[in-house]
Image (cartoon, rainbow, N blue to C red; front, side, top):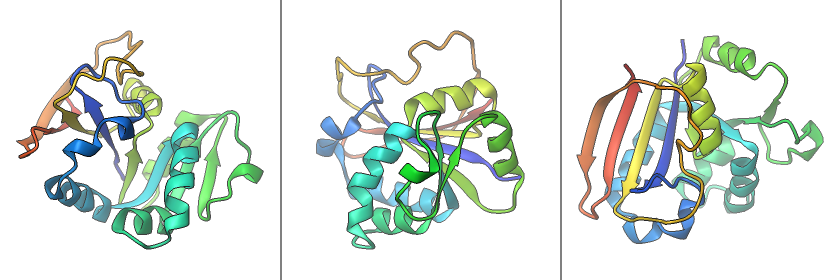
Length: 182
């Protein structure tokens, strides 16, 4: 069975929305290497509507100009949305997930293949955790209080026990932490 693994950038105060506004100063080769390893173990992408729209605008035009663009442009993308339709999906190799979202994601997990990667999409990650569908949560925690923006666990109303499986402190002060369900 395939696993679903999410990777997010987060501030110390839990903000995971629009990390591009504050994470650049902490970017490093160490972080790039960790992300490259996770992408190599993946063959599909799962994301929410907002992440799809932002990533398509940012990465699609770059072609294969860098490893992240090459991965995103060459990998099948599944978009969870109740407002998009197939006609609005202009990024090649993209499928829409609507209706019985939990059932569709369960079928994806049961299909053969590598890990399904969830880059960003904090609301989707929160929902996947609550539904018991997320197998791994990798956080790059920036040494910064963002102050405003949607927090990863904002509105979570139930306890979800997790187990720390890996962690490391990067030279920039970023803490990389990987959790699985306890």
